[in-house]
Amino acid sequence: PIRWIKTIYQIVRNGRRSDLIFVNGLGVESTIANLILKKQLIRKIVGDPVWERAYNKKRTTESFDEFQNNKHSFLIEVQKLLRNWSINSAEIIITPSDHLKNFVSGIGFSNKILKINNGVDITDIKRANESKADINLIIISRLVVQKNINIVIEAMKLLDNKNLKLSIIGEGGEFSKLESTIHDLNLQNRVQLLGKIDNNKISQFLLTADIFIQASDYEGLPHSVLEAINYEVPILSTEAGGCKDLLNDGERGFIIPMPPDKKVIAENISFIIKNKAEATKRADEAKAFIN
Image (cartoon, rainbow, N blue to C red; front, side, top):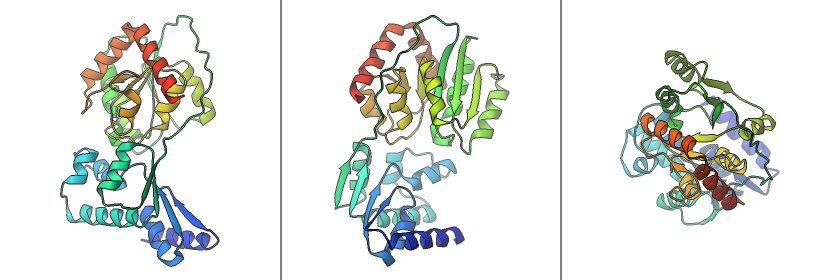
């Protein structure tokens, strides 16, 4: 409660000098502050914090869409009501994907909704063609439950290939658990949990990556996948949220069915490795699409 009060105070204090408020997070706090400010409020919606909070705390196992339609505990229902109130108080909503646009419409928002896709700077990439011993897999993600990174690590255990290496870049509440999983499966030599990496260094990992993996239960339109596509890395991903638009039924990548399964992920990794020409073709299709 103290943090809420401080946050609302800072929004009011800074907002007095502003013509409008652009909200990207802190939705309820901004809406409360705007009861005083009475400014134009434009909001970007990239997910549902109520679902994410409940999912991470294991208060629900439902998918993003199932969660919206079903009834839950009193506390969760109150949070959903606050979320709906704050969203409906905006004059304009911006979403990065059709899926999120439909989510906003579904909670009764009747003002203007703009779909503005997330973007990435398109660059000419010169990937090394020389043969190398290691096959590099990469994950760039927040380390939270719904990303299912533990399942990808378990898939690595099923793949009996010492040259197969997985690098995980990112930080979050699951770091210690993932570290324990790597240790318990004796994968320290094949899986690296790198934590936070400076943005200007991530390109070095993408240039040498052979497969980018995203096994999440939900995504808006992930910048990390867009960046991997820009670097012409074959994508292995669920079709969660905006990822469905990017993959186009597998034309521009390889699909992990929902819910993610370690055996299926391992099979897909093996397929991509054995079918390099097809993987390159789909990576090229993806690059052309985001371009």
